[in-house]
Image 1: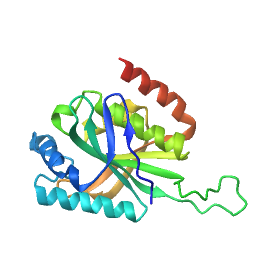
Image 2 (image 1 turned 45 degrees about the horizontal axis):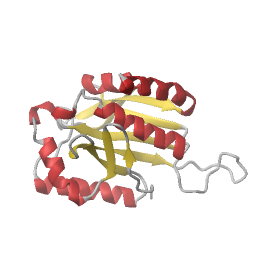
Image 3 (image 1 turned 120 degrees about the vertical axis):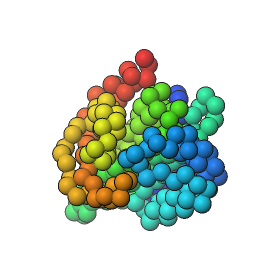
Image 4 (image 1 turned 180 degrees about the vertical axis):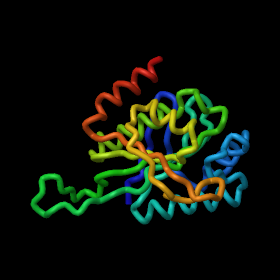
Length: 207
């Protein structure tokens, strides 16, 4: 399992996702249902409870770590996000890069959505700054990936604004939110790029 941790920034607090967050998440996801064309958004208590249970099970399996995104200003749940698809590489026993502490070699940040009122407010930038810092500075991962539906231009612009590099389109990659089979746009940040990306995100938050 990826160790649960609370990540606290200037605008948001990322809390390990739990059943206690269900009501707040439903309130966030139902602010404007029309705004989530490319996201699979649970909008009822029962659907959100299943969504949270599934996320917690994936964490127990060691592949992900989900968070509720809590806005610091009013202590309100405004969305969620997670580390997912954690990779544990099979290094040779004598490799200096081999790790035995249970931390991943690479990870993806995904399943991110925010209430309409939290979008374009700096909340996403602060949350991504926290998650990238934990991945690179604490886990010492080699790569963080970010995927989105190729058609989701808003998400792609947000990822590019973080400083992630576009790697290409993965064709016929997974089920899309509209029920079709989607192509995914893949981006990444690697460890050597993190210092410059961190400086860029800090400057954005300072503004």
